Length: 213
Image (tube, rainbow, N blue to C red; front, side):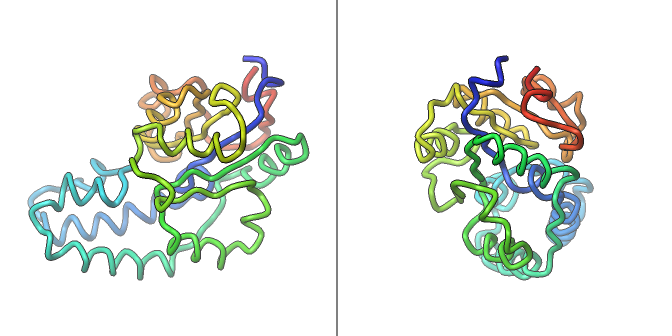
């Protein structure tokens, strides 16, 4: 691909900007053992799903418990650490210096973003737009969120690169008609390779030209 044709890079949040997936595995591992002690490893089956999808696929039979789980999740996220995926800051600064537009496309909500901004006051300076679950009518793997991000930035989908780590996220970028970069932070590289054009472990020593060459 000719990287000079790319005008925007769009990033999922967890597992792509921040290395938070191991912490979520701890939280959901506890919740799954609380309600489904006879299904060990259930937390691995819901990796990359939105909260709505998790409730629909795993906790649908426990509607009265869902608000309690949500409250525990909110409490957990308030004390999470938000460490950047290795090499992310130099990479995003490189994109900004090159005039590449950047956006966050996350299924997280505004409440979660308050925690992110409290931990990283510089966060918004890295992006031209931040789209959260409140901005979408359909969740990943539907392309709606990425198409809206491209529209917000005023660029065509084929001029965008989307960075994702989950299967639903990778499918969302591909369905939107964008170049797909998979981060092997949550799932093994060989598992996500069929859903991505490029697979990387982190952003160390990466530039847009080396990534897309």
